Image 1 (cartoon, rainbow, N blue to C red):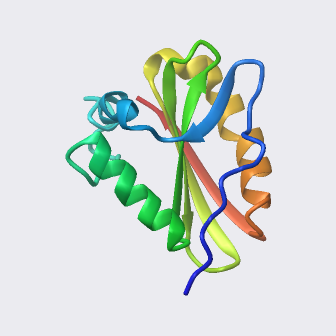
Image 2: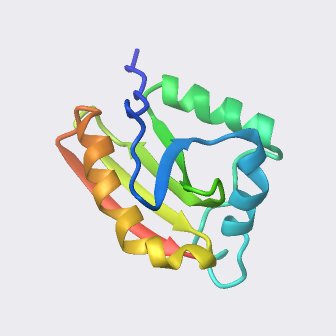
Image 3: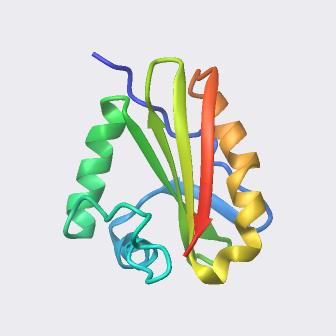
Length: 134
C-alpha cells in the first residue's frame, strides 16, 4: 500500500498567502477557476459535484499516496487558487498551479518557492511543474 502524502508541517506561508488543505467552502471558487471561459478547454473539471464530495475524494487520494491539493489563500482569507501534486512513481511527481485572474500578481511566487519546499518534504527526488491563471 502506498504511503499517504503528508500535509506540509508547518503550513507553507509567505507575506501574501498560505497553502492549506481544500475546504468545503472553497468549492465554488475552485469550480470558477476550472470553468473559466479562457482556460476551461485545457483544465480538468472538478471530479466531484460538490465541496463535501470533493474533500472526501481528495482525502482518499492523499491517503493512497496519489494526489495532494492545497488551496492558496491570501492572508485576508480570500481563495486565490490551488496547487496540486500528482505522484506518478514513488520518486517522481508532477505539479500544477491554478490561480484566479485576480491572483495573477502571485503567479510567480505561488508557483515556485512553495512547490520546492512542500514537495521536497514528501521525499520526492523529481518534480515536474506547470502553472496557469484563469
